[in-house]
Amino acid sequence: MNRFYIEKLIVSGGWHKDTVIDFKPGLNFILGPSNTGKSLIMDCLDYVFGFSPKKNRPSKIVDNQYGYEYVTLHLATGTGSVILKRKIADSKILVSGTDPTVEHGTYSVSHNAKKNINAVYLHLLGIDEPHVIRSAETGTKTQDLTWRSMLHLFFIRQGDVARESSALLAPNSPGHTASASVLLYLLTGKDANSLIATEDPKISEAKKKAVIGYIQEKVKELTARREKLEVALSSSSITDPRTSVERIRKEISDLQTRMDAAAKESQQIMSEIYAWNGKLSESKTVEHNLSVLHQQYQADIRRIEFIVDGAASISPIRKKVKCPICGEYAERVQSTSFIEASAAELEKIKHHLSELNIAQKDVNHQQKTIITTIRALEEKKDTIDTLITNQLQPQLSSFEEKLEQHLKLIRLSGELDFVRQDEIQYSSELFNKETEEISRPSKYNVFEDYDYDLIKGFEEKLRQILKASHIGGANSARLNMENFDIEIDGLKKSVSMGGGFCGLLNTITTMAMSSYLIDLGRNAPGFYAVDSSLTQLSEAEHKEQNDTIKQNFIKYLISNAHERQVIIVEQTKRMPFIPTDSEENAVHVIQFSRNKEKGRYGFLNDVYNAEDQ
Image 1: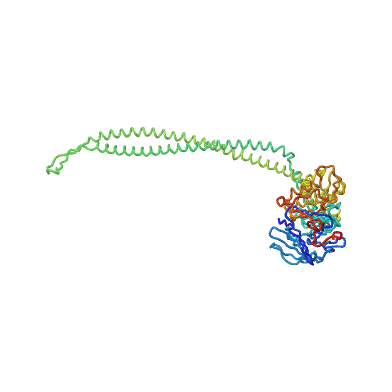
Image 2: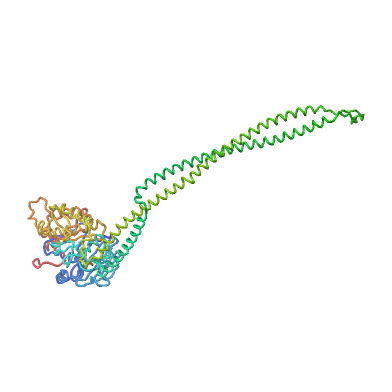
């Protein structure tokens, strides 16, 4: 945030040597006797800030030029400097400097001018978009947010410092709405467009009709739905669905348990069937192998029997055969001795065949046993599957259907209760809306847009300064939202400690608020200036105190001099002590002597009081 502060004030022109006041960051005291031009410094600053003299609020520099022609103000910004030069008794201000964000040229102090100085100061605060704020309690009147409308929070002239009205509101303001709206914007960034405006009665009437129509339609829908639900519930034979739900759920649970057990048993039986089928397959393989062997034995028996029978019917034969070696003929007799061996082999095979027949019978018996077992298991499985399919599953489905019916009735009953409640509610709202009177435009209370969390931080800052100044009742200090002013111990500032306190309390109030804005990171300048805040506070009233309020207030300012630029304009005789000029402590003291022979006489060069000539 750009916290610009004041560097230099120059009054020049005519036959005078330039009058210069150099301000420093930190605490600046401008001290001197009466009639030395102290308040004229504030008047010159205000003049360059855009003040337009009026009959009831004249300008000292305009009415008493003393031959000077220009007032020039040097401001320091975060990115350079801004120089504003205004000719005395003119409405134009020439803007120049080194800050690249500020457009140079001639600006007018007139708010209606196309190029007015207000835009420059708002830009220096970081406000570049136009804003409007509420300006009246009645209607929807607004006015533009301006630099001048917020200046009283940071810059207090002598004539305004001791006023009994709230220092947070602009002096001489016809109403509090505009000033409070400006502060609300500075605290929150909310302008008139961000706040709820009073609605036109015609719009309110149209909205009322629209709402009534909507409510009537909702009542109609709810009534139709209620009647439909009541018919559905009355047509059911179930009188108490909630009581039956638990019983049905238990039945479903029991059936599910039985089905799970039956399914598990069916799976176990199926596994046994698979196992017996495996055994049956093995048995058939053995049976096939025995059958093949049986056929082989029978073929061997037929072959051997053929040989034996054939040999038995043939007598021995003598036959001469020629020797292949010597060529001699010899007689050879055909042998029949193999018949006995074949007969023996035949008996052996027949014996094996007999054993094979026995084995085949055993296999056949085994197969019958296996098949019987499988069929028994299959019948058992079929019985279980039939139980599941034809009995348990239908029963379960039936109970689930019953459960859904009961739950549906419960849901419908619950819905009916809600529909009845909504129907009553909407009917009530319809009655209220139909009998509602369209409100006429009421007064706008800007303070309703404040909230305590926003004010709390300000009050803490206020109490901090009051405590440091040793002002009695500091812990009870608060902002009274009825008059938008501070009170101590429940009393208004003008009566809490005497009228002389108003100047100091107004100073502390605005100082706390401007400091609070900086703490919040909101739009606010980096300077605070006040004229004659101690003037009306008489030390004699508090001579019994060891540490006076004035002393402690000045000590607070010195101890916090590094926080921001503060400019205090005060009569020397009203100061409890003269602070020491110290660059290290950020304290800068400018003193006027009203003595032509000693020090600086006053603000303007070559200007003296008649009695001092």
